[in-house]
Length: 133
Length: 312
Image (tube, rainbow over all chains, first blue to last red):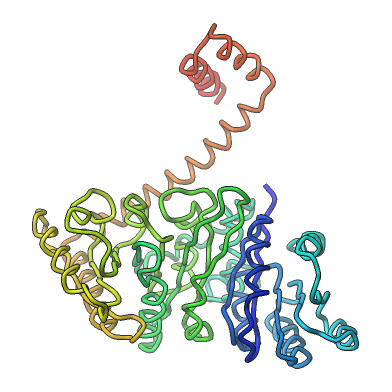
């Protein structure tokens, strides 16, 4: 049996706009994934710890407040510290192109901007989630 | 260090991985369980059940916070429904538990039902054993939002707490078979709302209709959102624990749990066996005979059973 994809959909920082994260959570569920949703205003520390305890393969971060350059890399860093560097980290929100380059350098593997279709996100995750070592 | 040592040392990442193995039916799971099972038996399992939206997750979070503050280790297994269509799930119990998610003494795992119907998940029994072996003093098992007949939690928990909210039916609802029979403790949550007293009275009056042996399930009022009544709930759970320990009911329950652990594994393995048997090509031919009414489902099932028992 193929292992089920477990994905953490998380909203770091002080941004309360959770519509996008909720739409994505539903789409991931309908694609057969188990989605753990954090709710809004979480810290990178909480998100990384939850990712470890829930043994997820993917962390999907959503941020619309402009603080992504601080928050997203911090989540990646904390996951590494906890020995969970095999977790796929992706992000979304209103993120300028120059920041996308920076975030990818910092270990966020893909950024999905406004207008991305849901199936693109789902397909990306299916093909890039790492099988357990 | 291998994963067995890490689980026994209480490492959360190892515990998380072990539970995934159990959930996914990974071939490494049986070996792992074999090696940690000897260390189980100390954890006390409390089941939390009730309809959707009555406040189960919030109460679990509050209980865990109190226990952790007493320096006890708390493991939480929170189950939410899997989609019957996609197999996916939204596991949202965490949203109510974020205050406790960074506590050193607390581990929380969300699980989908993955097709199980009793309000839990097929992997729950062995996941409880993993947490027990990892040194968790308390294991809180939260069911899906239960209807009337999701009563599997009673088979795994030593103390079962049934949570209700005001305004959800009259005393006839409370008299029915099923979930109202499995509670060792009843809680009317959202007690700050109108009708809470009446709900509590109705439940109490129905409970008085039943004969009990030494323990009369109490009905408590809580308001989890406001963190009121939680200490009282914990004291009641501990009183129940004391009572069943003294009466020997706990020992009996543990014996029953061991039997159910074995049964669950047998059931899984036998159903895998049957499923693979049904994929054989000659089964199709036999099925044709059922379709054309030359045979019937009972005859066919009996012949499959006979064939397999003889082979083994």
